[in-house]
Image (cartoon, rainbow, N blue to C red; front, side, top):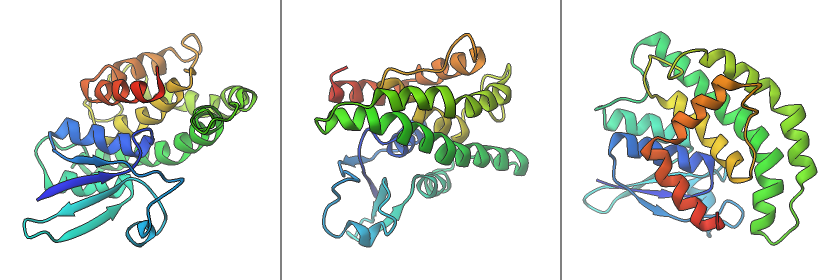
Length: 219
C-alpha cells in the first residue's frame, strides 16, 4: 500500500497531515494541488474542494481517496497503530479531538482569512498585502483564542496526556502560517502559549516543513 498526499505545502491542513505522518514514520509522496486552481475532476474526489486528499494505492493499483485532514489522520492512526497520536482513553481522546476541532475551525479560520490570505496569499498572487486587516485580526479577533489556549496549556508540556498528540499538531500548524507572515502572539501577554509554540515548532517534524516552506516564500 502506498500513500500520496494531494495539496499545497502552505496549507495548515496539509502540514498537519505531513507532521502527523512524520511523527508516525509513515512514508508518502506529496503532489502539489492548489485549492484556488484545482485540477479537472478534483471535486469528484473532494466534493467540498478541501485539501489535503489522501490517495491510497493498493498493490494491485486500485486507488481510493480520503479528503479532509481530520479524516485522514484518524484513518492513518488506525492503519498504523504504533505510536498513536489520537489517544485511546475515552476522555483523553475526546479532549484531543476537541482541540483539533477548535484549531481546525477557530484558529484556521481567524488566522487564514484574517492574516495569511491578506498577507501571504496576496504576495504570492502579486498583490499588495493588506497589513491593516492583518493587524486588526491580531488585535481584535485573536486575543480570545490566544487567552483560551494560554489557560489550557498552563504549565503542561503538551495539551493532552503529557505527550504529543493530534491536539498539539493541529493547534500549532496554523501558527506556522501566522509566523510566515511575520506575526506571533505577544510573548509578554501570552507567555505560556508563546513558549509552547516554540517547543512545538522546534520539533524535527515541524522544522522539516517550515524549512521547506521558507524556501518557497524566499524566507
